[in-house]
Length: 96
Image 1: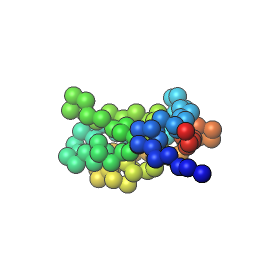
Image 2: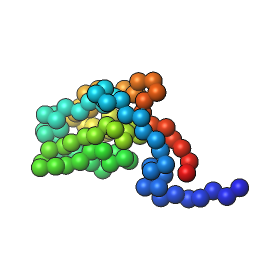
Image 3: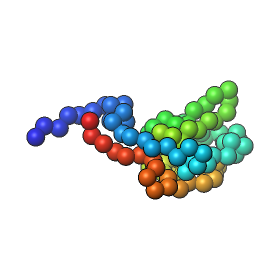
Image 4: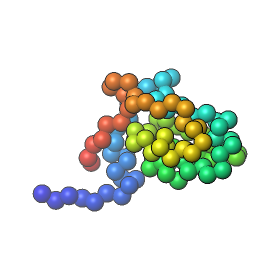
């Protein structure tokens, strides 16, 4: 058996996401984020779902890997709600 080493981008592209439209499993309070100076979320999210746009933090839950890193690393409490997605929704890890 041979195992192919994938780049992070290749590995992420093999995953399947079933997005629960209108029911985000992570809620971020942008007013809290606006006061944050650390902005760890911009560098610690392995899926890079936190972005800085026009001085504001934006977040897209659709590609979430459900690792919880943002919840743990947010020093200001900007991640106000973090839950696993409802049944049948979220990420399914696959191999290519």
